[in-house]
Length: 475
Image 1 (cartoon, rainbow, N blue to C red):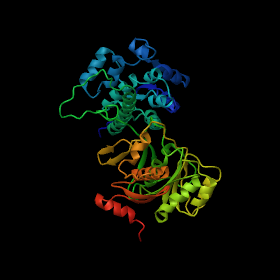
Image 2 (cartoon, rainbow, N blue to C red):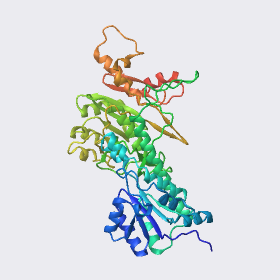
Image 3 (tube, rainbow, N blue to C red):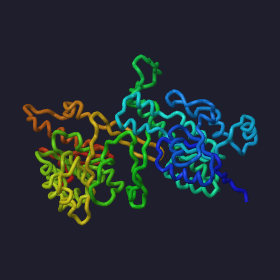
Image 4 (cartoon, rainbow, N blue to C red):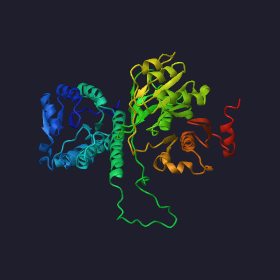
């Protein structure tokens, strides 16, 4: 029977993160694998007892330019890219005196970590890896004969295949190659996201526009929108119990309640995250006013401001007490024991807040099923959350609705003014507009003093919306 397995006799190892490399080292020693390595990786492997050949010994050229040039050499890349099932490739390597690699293990400079740390531009640029992605892509392209490993979670599998001499099958090498291409694609997308933000098109570049092309602000709407998300959690189920779901996070953005600490309750579901996001978006920018929102099925059924967070919650709950059952609550202020006592008799899925005062979580948790309590969420000033709704092979993306924050006076546009209207009346209009901002599709509503009283979402015919909003509680 023909096998596609290729034993691992020679390996190239160059990793920034050294965690878990001991597993590989033990396997290399046991199997007598020839190991070629770079800089600090070679030093670490030597400490672990692995006989190591430095890359500079293979290339005949020293590492240079502060480490910018190490592996960018034909003696390395020919050994990676040679398809040893091709007799011509094998013959050329022999003529050139170059030995092929069976395994390449690489992980890249931590660009996203550097950006998150707040490093300056020069330090950030130095963490843009060049040689690493080149080796990864070369080995992934040549999966016919080379195994590429970029994920430390695969080290144990690699060690087992090295130690028993079987190597990887073609199907396994292709699987590893697919993971590697995903790794470099995400890495490049992260770099693109940073450069698009920090290196926009200068005003000195005057690009001629065709007569039928609408001018566009490329800083907000680039020609190619690239973004990457890392899977953080596999969720219990999707929008419905028969659907699977997962939560993905933006590696460059540490803001958002998805990064918050969960203080109690069962793991959050897809619907919990969607509703909690809607609730938080409804209240986060009310500061310095204290605001509370109650959301059900991704629409606010209550939104109010108050002198205390407990008062704001009572008003928000009173907007629609029936719909509040099984809903999600978000507060833009610390949840106090008084508010928690008010939540206690109301079945609530999730409570989102910047923090919970001691005793607050325990009081709110005294229900048949304890709600989840994510806390510590913050949204950076000047940073727009970008809503993305998955629709088969596309993502619908638009800028967040923050007009009321930049130009508050515009919030009253379209409303009939009355002579001598009090300031409280104007603030009530703004509250109503903010509430409707979070209602999905053709919203209409009514407000009463400092709370959104009735909201009518989702009506396909706009003309029916005002009636729906005002008749919501008519019986």
